[in-house]
Image 1 (cartoon, rainbow, N blue to C red):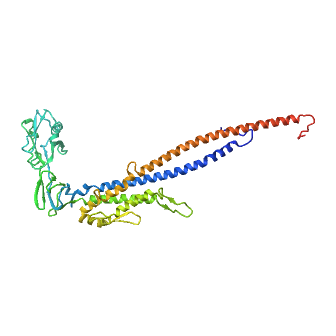
Image 2 (image 1 turned 90 degrees about the horizontal axis):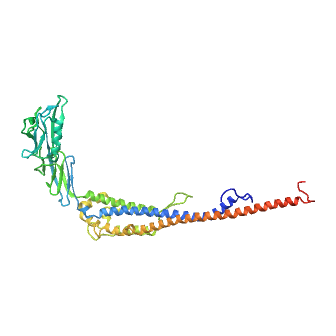
Image 3 (image 1 turned 60 degrees about the horizontal axis):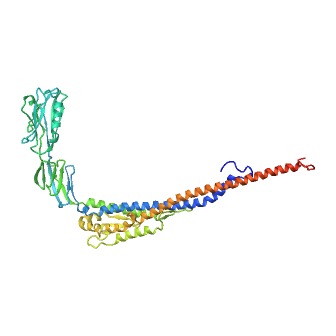
Length: 466
């Protein structure tokens, strides 16, 4: 009931009611604000910890994978001439490879024709991919232009891997049909034949090279020619499978004479190293996050310290302590028993550091021991996963605590709503009471004034202003 008040009594009723309402409201508001801040801070901190644990769990899963250690790689010393891949069954070895020639596909051109060439009569063209091919017959209508013939050929030959186009010579105004084959390898040259005189100008012998304005091949189909450790080999494709068992090589360029490239087949040490580094990075992020969330940092004299959201939290101490115990717990095997054997050591702040040279040497000399150290039911990754699973799983420690904090935050909202209603009711009641008092005082003042006037009118009374 805010409005013009205090007319009768002259009191500042709005100010009095505001002060009383504020005195009732302020302590509870401050309490709820403190509880909300503390709950929000802890909720956010638990979310950060859960996120870091999730990243760490993903990194562990990638490293705890037997297939990672079963992979084989084939690397080329000259990728501009050859690239290679290997299956898991490939045997390790080093091979010298010379690439003398790439496999090529057939490209042929018809004789040079007038740009306005058209067929004088209908007929049939037979397109063959190799002299022994049965061929594909394409019906050509009378008065067909080179463009129309091209379109007919492309429609008929699309499943055969042959495409046609028209190439124009601006110098003399002539045009040619040019056909390209997709398949490489010797004996796959394109031939264009016909038994119809009206189409004879379109025939091509794919074994004869173009000369002047005559028809012939622009590129002849040929096998790739290469050698492995001095053994001369051929392939109809530039993708060579099983010349080295379980290795696929892709020829992309010629090597220089007497300068063979090297193909090395072996364990995927690069992939393993990458996953180990991802594990270390994820662990370091987790430790850094837990350190930040549980630390108290002084920021200067007279200023309050910056307090982490989980300072003194027993769950964090138990989590980090359990992981550190697993990191120093030696595996029951030879060769690699602890992370230090891999060149991975703990620094003063609890994070891990990798000695790249030592890790590389261990992977080279003791690859199988590295695999059993990390993988399997008793491997380090499984043991660490068991330590953190109770925290990050659905319904785990962190989720339960975050759910509890969320309930607290929801309850704070409800308490604020209740406080607002209570304050509004209090304000209404106070205004009602004070306004009633104000009206009563106003009536008493009016009565007093009327009484004073009546007494002043009596005979013999003396007025003060006389």
